[in-house]
Image (cartoon, rainbow, N blue to C red):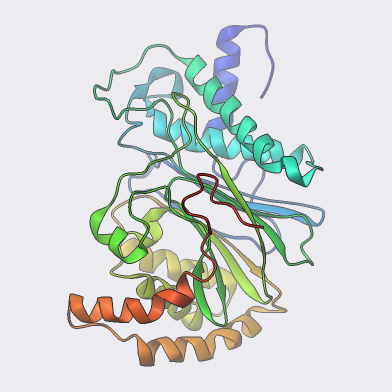
Amino acid sequence: MIENNNETDEKNDFFSMLSKLPGMPEDPAGQMLVICRPKVEGCGEDCFLALQKDERFFCGVFDGCGGSGGKVYPAFGGHTGAWAASRAAAASAGEWFLSGFQNKNKEAPELASYVRKYLKTCKEQDTGGQVLLGSLSKDFPTTIAAFCMNDTKGNIVDFYWCGDSRCYVLDKDGLHQVTADDSAVQDAMQNLREDAAMTNVASASQDFILHRGTKKIRKPAVILAATDGCFGYLLSPMEWERTLLETMHCASSEEKWMDLLDERIGKVSGDDYTLTAWPHGFRSFTEMKQTFEARLSFLEKNYPAAESEEELFRQWEKYRNGYESMLAECKEDPERGWE
């Protein structure tokens, strides 16, 4: 954050920095793929961060919680606290990443402290604003889902999450949810129907847990982070995987894949939606498509469009073991981590 002795200039500098997001402090680099689409142009409450420095990279998505964070702030150009929160969390992650963390055991608390600092700065910018009544309101709430790798040639990935945005791994065996939702409902299929309330989000008004887990990823694979606008309006997790693979199959390049995926999600989503992806271990997009051809054929044969809810849930019971095979363990543990 830019330091200035003049309080008004400090506020303007902070708002200006957040207004440059998503994509701060630089545009997506290397192999990083990004979709970031607001439901209403100019009012989107999602944000992303995609950075690479030497052999390290960071990809993350941040979904400002528009319900509990719907208070409007003049200091942020009339935007909501949710809009400011997602951008502040992204900017804090960028500062953390570019500062060059060294001690692996301290990565999670260090990142969380950066997020807390930026969200606190949001709260300090403006004491006015439109009052939002209700016990569920929060100051600058946002979800976080991100992954980070210290060596792009390796296979160790750190995942960070808070709320109901998710990280996934897509490999030849299918789509695997990696991060556990901070939600009263853990079943991904049931969650699509109940829209369960979140039990933990980053905010400036109460403490939160930023979960961290480390996974060894079998290459080749596509690692993804997505806000719930990407997957939350589909009928099933199976449809989410089919959406990813069908658009990949029809694309001629990684950029075209993102275009087709953007178009497909946009037809059904009723929210902002943001996705970052890192194709890991593929020599080309052609090789990536070839890797998933057999899996797409398997999905089409074994999980066709269901004619009823009962059939859809029967498919889910067959599908879920593979889908949940990387899911964060120790759900009774509030840290929900694994090594």
